[in-house]
Length: 194
Image 1 (cartoon, rainbow, N blue to C red):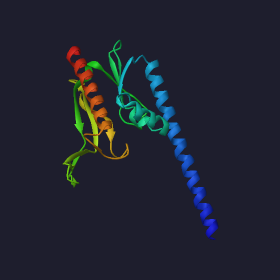
Image 2: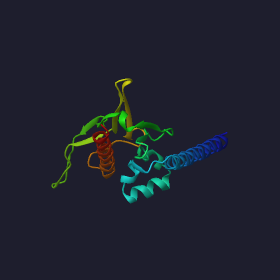
Image 3: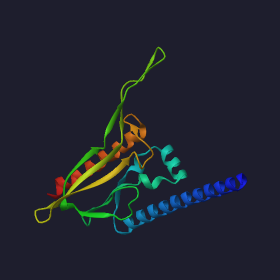
Image 4: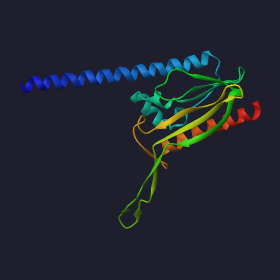
């Protein structure tokens, strides 16, 4: 009886492992297909979180098959004067917005918690740290005929991306730099489209 239960447990674990690997492979394939579609549609420039990560982190993500979560961002077609958004790591359908519909853009942190530090030994003092639960960009679109609506680019979410990050974490700094780059590019579009 006990050996049968162990065998069933082992088989269940093996099935779960292959199911998980298959889904990760499927997501990586979808990510690759998305990138190819953007290129084929004429989007010549992109700003995505993955490109801002360190080379070490990129290698780890590719090896672990989680890079699709970090390929969220914005694609630009300056000839057609449109942008395409991939709003989160599990979305495979782009949202296309004409330049003239973009009204405002801003970076939103999604909740911070503060962690008190402790004194470790006579010389090391770990102070108060801010821990982020997410980082997103809010883009307001619309015009006088349609009114406005908000779209969110979720660049980082603690639940999806494997936990909270401190503001001093290199990965978090990379995400912030990506967010600033997206905001700079969109503000430039707003400035010269109007």
